[in-house]
Length: 95
Image 1 (tube, rainbow, N blue to C red):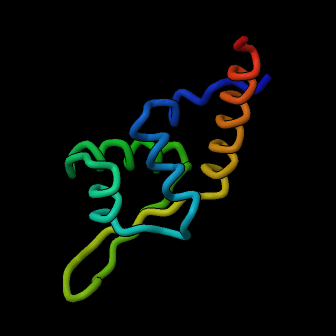
Image 2 (tube, rainbow, N blue to C red):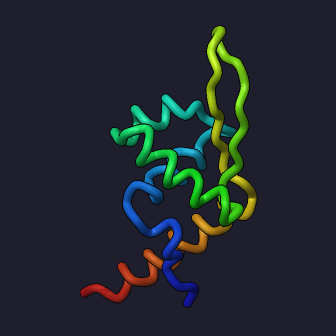
């Protein structure tokens, strides 16, 4: 059995990687709104997942303002798949 991934198990991080699994990348402010968290909370989670190699982050100018784009890496995508498989195995053990 593949274990739960402690890096993506916390609810906000799980929501973040799950949201990013559906797109190539998303704007930081869009993620903040979707997850209903503050800039500082999202920044902390993004930084931790970037450091682990699960996310990539880039800065650019969009509509005349500086913005940060965040995307899931191949490593992050596989970590999410493995985590979901572990959750499914746990669910299967419940009567």
